[in-house]
Length: 79
Image 1: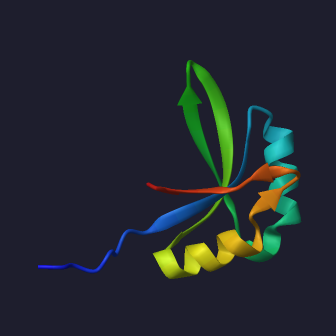
Image 2: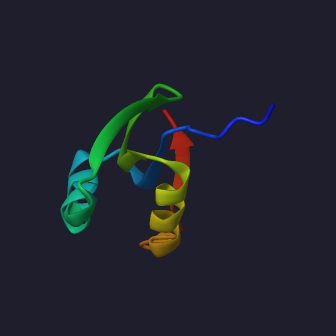
C-alpha cells in the first residue's frame, strides 16, 4: 500500500544566535509571514527564521525561489 506523503514542512531562511539579526531577516521577508523558532543547540539558543508549515509541493516551490539567503543555503525540516 502506497500512502501519500502529507508531512507539513517548514523552510528555514536562516538561523542566528542574535535576536536582532533574526528580526532583521524577518522584516526582509515579511511578505512570506515568517516566524522565529527558538532552539537549543549545545546549550546555546539559536533563532530560526522559518516559513510554514506547508505541504511538500508548496515548500519546494518556495525553497527553489529562495534557495540562498545572504549566501547561505535555506533548508527544510519537519516540526
